[in-house]
Length: 111
Length: 115
Image (cartoon, rainbow over all chains, first blue to last red; front, side, top):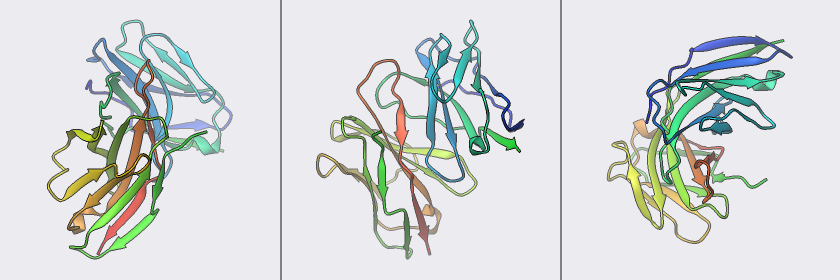
């Protein structure tokens, strides 16, 4: 699995867009970029994933650079409930591929 | 929306005792996983399971650990003789058969405390 690098912490004002960066310069062609988050000690929650195109769902948008070496997760209107640790993970689309979690970015939404 | 469930939510046990952690994956999913997270540390992969056999296991998953899918719905993790260092949150996850990436969906976890 490609290693990912994320800033350890970020703050964002409530109601503003939270932009969380991730570097994955060694990502291989068959690896997707996945984003999960973990609120307190709850189970990791899937947010979004993509291969090379930008993706959007009801939770977030994912912007992947053309060279696929980095990506940004965007939470368009952050709320206090978005305070969590966010993990960027590169993983192939093969079945049974384990997820390798790093330390993630601790995002704090400021009222 | 379908979700992964886990029982119990909390388990306290004495060192050396056996524990069984239970998971009900999402119903049409085919791939199953266990992860654990020691307090303050990263989420770590333990084992993956497909077609009634282990696909991959980490070095953490030693002979004290075993997994089983005893029926069509449950997926269990057994720790045969618990140690103090087994205290952690244990998360079950499952993945469906779809294309476009194999998204793993996690359960809420079981907090295991070994005394």
